[in-house]
Amino acid sequence: MKPFLSTVVNKIDAKGRVSVPAGFRAAVKDSSLSGIICFPSFSENSIEGCSMEQLEALSDMIDQMPPFSEQRDALAASILGNAHELSFDKEGRIKLPELLISHAGMNGEVMFMGLGRKFKIWNPETYALQEDRLAAMARESRDGLRFGGTS
Image (cartoon, rainbow, N blue to C red; front, side):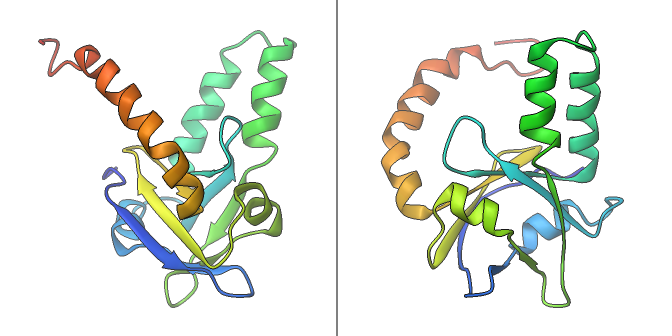
């Protein structure tokens, strides 16, 4: 699968419809779903997004946990229980459910941010408040990146 790349701000209409960036649509072009999967982030006021195949991989990771553990059930409920299959319309738009719009505080514009195998959808103003913290965290973490097992 092609990675989700770039950051794009688009308008969300009164019905909750928003155009998904062309690069994001291209990344899921060969997916089993003609659309994307979205669920509320459990760590931020944003929306997590991915392909159906990535959601299946997350489900497989959850299935590796002890079947009746509280941690497994918490992750399954947070991710799988709140996931929405959002199909593209003819114009490449999706309709965000009110639950997701409310969780992320969407109001007029949304920001799609590619993160490789997944992406996030933010209220641009909310992200702006996080940007410095995330940039500092990236600087602190950069030494952990490796190319093909080398530093």
